[in-house]
Length: 358
Image (cartoon, rainbow, N blue to C red):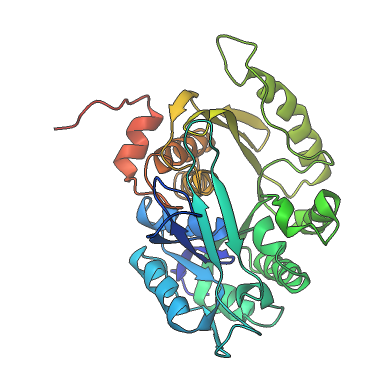
């Protein structure tokens, strides 16, 4: 590897074309705004646009106008697309196509709702051998690989590719982060939550930074707060022993982080984050009854800030603060990815407010 790695961060994942009806409903809208998005990709885009890291995406597209549109959106976000695997389009999408995500934002009592059309996507058909990881990690150079349970859950072949990527990253000394990101729709025919956790446990020995807490119990929504001085005291008390058990089981983990969210309405949530790093716990500031425009991608924006804080500043407290602030700001603008700047993130993390800036 050269003295200067080509990438600070590479993400392995599917990138979808999101069609957003704005304030309306998918079922009645006559116009949509196009965004690009995907759990693993969103972290790379946020790390590039907000935090200035050199990032790239490992994914696949069918080579047609939709694929080229998604590529253009990726390039507008500053993410390198030179490693994308392009697959010839069959003209009908019988064998390969590009994924489309119709997602409405929700408001008040109406929750956000997604309708994802991703069957036979090029990314879901990626398999071991599609990327030369020895060249990518060993020759080009990369400091950090990020992937997650959404991509790994697309198919048996993407699960195998995720394992191969993590093995290669470990071989070349690349830090690996993995977002558990359980999606029931991906596991309906593959063993449900238990199936996803079985895969996660296969991957856990290769992971250095885990987003979410690996457990045999499905995630549950936060209950009403019981401590007036800390809206996430109960969640904190529950997660800490779980994290300590997990990190004792997998000593390769040096960081475990989780976002904390309580939904009051679709447009008002409590928000925060918890991070364990090398034996010490760190909490972000709490964001009680936080106003939301579009919650999609907030967790991925958290990951981007966390990676930046650990990679560039080697400071776990700053990492969880930047992650929570970046995720909060991402929920104030439309689309899956953040439009925030680093100064805005730093100011909010330190307790800044929404006063008009002139």
